[in-house]
Image (cartoon, rainbow, N blue to C red; front, side, top):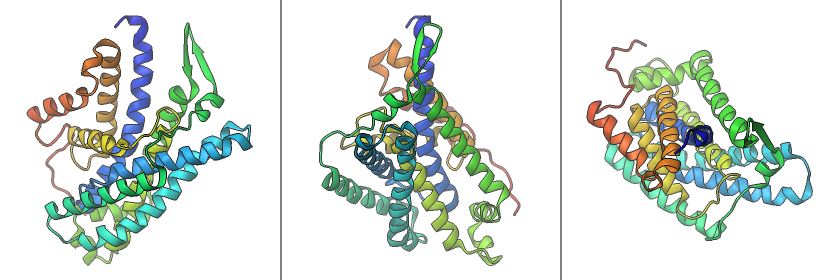
Length: 301
C-alpha cells in the first residue's frame, strides 16, 4: 500500500470502526448490567439495517431532502430497538435472569435463530441498500482526494455523540446511576430499593437501539443480505473480547484499533481482511486473557 492510499484507509477504518463500536457498545452494556452475552445482538443490527433501507427506499422518490432521508435512519433504528428490545426482554431475557450463564447464552442463541428466520420472511434474500443517503449528502474534497461526507463526517460524529450521551446518562442521571449500581452488585442495589427489572428493561432497550442504529447507519454504505447479522455478531464479540467484557470506553478504542488495521489490510493485504479482527483478538487475549482494559479493583457503591 502506498502512502497516497493511507488517508483513504484511515477514513474507511474510522467509519467502519464507528459502526462496529455502536453495535459493540450495546453488547457490552447488556453484559455489564445484566451479565448476559447476547448472541442475538447481531440480529438487531440486521433488522435496523433492513428497516432503514426499506424506509429510505420508500421516501427517496417522494422528497429531495437529504436530511429527511438521514433522519429516516434514526426513526427506523429507534422503532426497531423499542419493538424488538421490549419483546425480547419481556419474553426471554427477564425470565432467564436467574438461569445459569450457559443457559442464558443458549436462550439468546435461540432468539437469534428465530429473528434470522423472521428477517428472511419479511425481506427475503434480495439485497437492500439505502445508498441514496450517501449520494444526496455529497462529497468533501481534501487535497486531491474526494471523500463522501457520510463516511468522513456523519458516521464518526454519530458514534461519538452516542458514546457521549451514554456516558452522560450513566454518570449524571438518576436512572443512569442506578444502572451503574446494578452493574456493580445487583443484589445490593435491589436491597437499596432499586428496581432491577426496570433497569434491566431500560438497559436492554437502549442496547437494542444501539445495535439497530449500527445497522441503520451501515445501510447507506453496504448491501444488506442474509447473514449480515451473523457477521456483525462475531465481529462485535471480537471487539468486546479485545476490550474486556463490560468496558464501554475500551470497546471504543478496540473498535478503532480493529477498524483501522482491517482497513489498512484491505489495501495492503486483501487476503487477510477477514482474519484481521480475530488475529488482533487472539494476540490480545494471549497477553491479557481478560482483555486490554479489564482491571481487577475493589468497587464501592
